[in-house]
Image 1: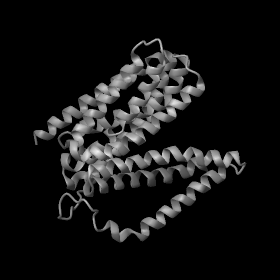
Image 2: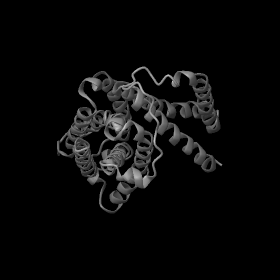
Image 3: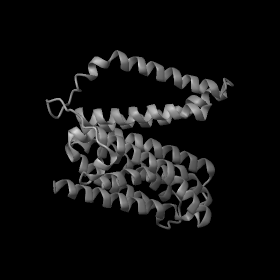
Image 4: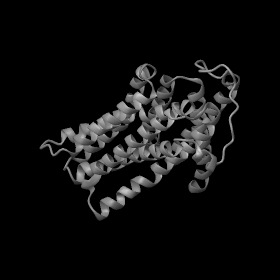
Length: 296
């Protein structure tokens, strides 16, 4: 039954993800977009503790799901009650006229100049973010000899680093702009990967490299989404954000298992090199996208 109901739950979550991101991209600044995704990190951080609390008090895992269901229901009620506020189109509209979104097919979307590159960038970013988090403990413990407790602690801080990084990004994103924030984020991620690759005698540089990757990841995802209306047109943004989310989920779903196969048949030692390749591809795709947008 869990697997059955996960399907409509996933469909609903995907719809909310695409619609909410597009709404903020159209009507709010890059600052608000960064803070929106920072609160995603808050949710990711809190959710395991909800289940842990229920299990530790012997309430059963079912009550963990019920607790989340109550939170979701309260959220729905709040959203329905505040629908009139959404119609005011936010506080920070870039343009005053109402945007009539175009309904585009996937072939039509792919024909827009620069779209294939942004989709690859999304796919690669999510592949890197989730591979880095899911396989960090295995790499640190099995290859670097770090204790299980230390590795687990730093993986938790990795996700916390993404959250804190997005809070901090909000204070400078409007000044620097989406493109510069993406470049800075990718550069910081590259530094983090190098800290893991370099053969220091101490394991601390590698552990802090993981945190650095988290901090660098912070601005990339929200800034790429926020730049969608300006890159591809406000009337196209809803269709574009939707397919960007789909590309992101493909990277999240398939690329960590791909690394698992590599680790099984080669070695978990290739972990930082795998991440490094993804960083290079991401940088190349975002820079090509910038040039394609300029050519319009």
